[in-house]
Amino acid sequence: MAGTVARITEISARSDVSFDDAIKVGIDRATATLRNVQGAWVKEQKVDVTDGAITHYQVVLEITFVLE
Image (tube, rainbow, N blue to C red; front, side):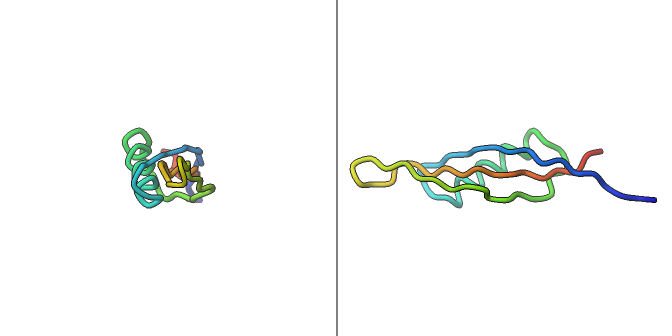
């Protein structure tokens, strides 16, 4: 019987550009450390605001990777 087992880990990533960039930063960092990354779920999004302007975009990602 063949099958796979995956693990999910939660990470937070920030960017001063956009949510898309924050997701890319998080995925790039996760794949630098974890093997067999298969996907990610954006669990939360948040912005920091200073003087009425967005200064940072933050995402919480759940990263799925298959165990060897």
